[in-house]
Amino acid sequence: MPRYFFTVQDGIELDDPDGTELPDLASALAEAHAIARDLIAAGMRSGRNRLHWRVLIKDTSGAVLVTLPFAETVAELDHIQGNRAGLAG
Image 1 (cartoon, rainbow, N blue to C red):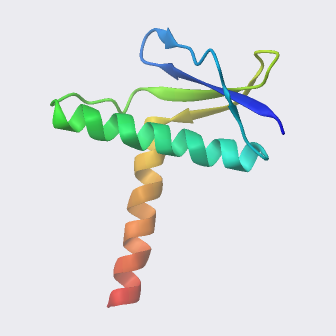
Image 2 (image 1 turned 180 degrees about the vertical axis):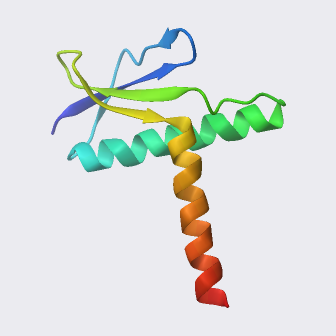
């Protein structure tokens, strides 16, 4: 199973030294969204805006496979909530 590394950028890079074994890149992207949501929520609780942060998904060689802006995670949540509202109405 491939190992993916998640680096959080907020002006500096916070590296993931161990990585996580996941079945594929889609699973790694889901994990990156979860990381972003958790950090956005923690920021909101402390009154900090973290929407300018991002998560990089890297492979074992250090190559960046995906860059996920935190703001994209929020946009995706808005889209999902909008769809749920449409289903309820």
